[in-house]
Image 1 (cartoon, one colour):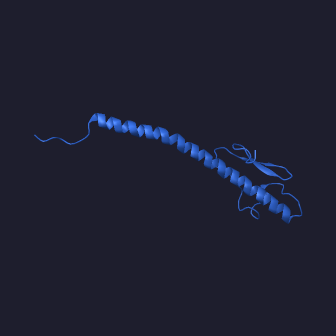
Image 2 (tube, helix red, strand yellow):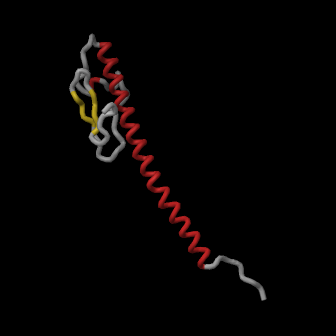
Image 3 (tube, one colour):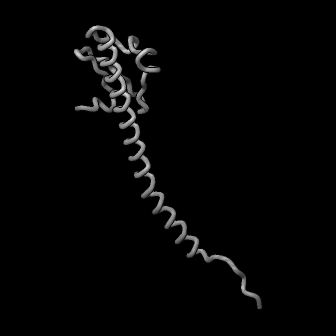
Length: 109
């Protein structure tokens, strides 16, 4: 008599259990790292705008821009956008003017 090769139901259930545990650990870690990446990207956008504001001011005898449109495309390539869902930037009059994200706030807060 020849023995049939294969896996038993118990072995398959153990494999499925192990995969489920790994997924339960990996998904929250992935979501957390995604949120951290969005926040860091947002703060980098804010620092870029702050730098552009200072360059604009230096080139225009201490005058500050009145909005992001004054900076695009001369001082920054394009209008920055936060990657978080529903996030918008708000221009705050200065001096010096700053932008603040509706989701992440301000990087120096």
